[in-house]
Amino acid sequence: MTRLAAIGVLLVACCSAVDAYVFLNDRWSDGSIVMHLQLGSSGTLMDGRPSWNASAEDALASWNSIVDRVKFRVVRDSSAPIGDNNGYNNVFFSSGIYAQSFGTTTLAVTTNWYRVSTGRRTEADVIFNTAFSWNSYDGSLRRTPSGATLADLHRVALHEFGHVLGLNHPDQGGQYVAAIMNSSVSSIDSLQIDDASGAAALYGGAGNSGGGGGSPLIAPGAPSDLTAAASGATVSLAWRAPTTGGPPTAYVIEAGSAPGLSNLGNFSTGGTTTSFASSGIGAGSYYIRVKAANAAGTSAASNESLLTVSAGGCAGAPGAPSGFLTSVNGSTVTLRWNEAAGNPTTYLVEAGSAPGLSNLASSDLGSPATSFVASGVGRGTYYVRLRGRNGCGTGPVSNETVLVVQ
Ligand SMILES: [Zn+2]
Image 1: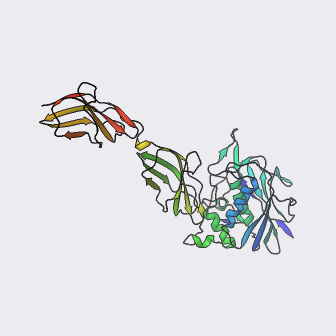
Image 2 (image 1 turned 90 degrees about the vertical axis):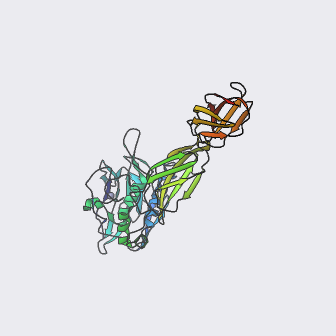
Image 3 (image 1 turned 120 degrees about the vertical axis):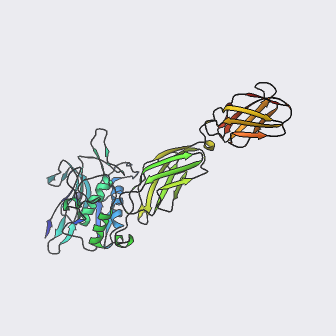
């Protein structure tokens, strides 16, 4: 005899919150749990997955990475008969729960059949409510253009498959924890430590040995608040460590020439420091994001930051130097001026035999210093001025002074 014990329901919004993982009363015998994915075609989803079934299969794989004594097995695009207590674990969209209706805020349900004589689970169907608009995406919850909830199949599938394994809602057990198994959908889009701990407690798990202190090792959540700044060709990044998932052991920095691309850089920092700096970065625009990583996996990306590195560390040629003065002592000439705006890297001195001419000298001083001493200057009258120069160009001329060397 089998009996329908409970139906797990994931709500759009609701409820009080929590303590730690909570179980249903029945679990599967050790071995395979065969899931028949029957969600139909979708077109490419927002997270790039090609189908509903691919999104659901990834969610099953996430649980498989935690548990030991049972493993989900997937029948892709299954044609198994769909029915309540028919011996198949059907995963599908429907407008109802067999003979029952969905609650108006219910995204999905998982049925729970078990054999009374053994207390072992025998069937779990996962039914997604067609009354909602669905996609598959990471991060914060999104809305449709009309303002309705855009349901994320991936995180709802993670939740429902947790019910399939035998987990229940920690928040309805009086526990306040971060968990995909909480009764309301949220920005949590991946398995959390509490989820993994619960699953590993039911079925054992690699999760129990990897994280130190007996806590299961799961992939980190996404870092946040990434900022990027350039000073010349030196780039500085800073971000916040993730507040969900397992502890990171390193961060992965990605940089691309367009949003979402990593064609210009993709490397691990190799450490847990939440900042990074590098010099000698070439001019260009970089779309940068950071991910957190540990042995269990790599998180979703942080926010993306657009960084522009200018040629030679400048945004344009320098402005005109001001306050240009000269003084003479015998054949030694001293020049002084105020620094030009716009990060000059050197100055160009021009001297001519008449105002505006440069027929006597045009000399790059090779330094951003704002004074210069020349000795052994020949007799004559010099009309002198200077300009700032950097990798972006040579700026306009300063005031001109007349210098007489006798
Ligand atoms: Zn639920």
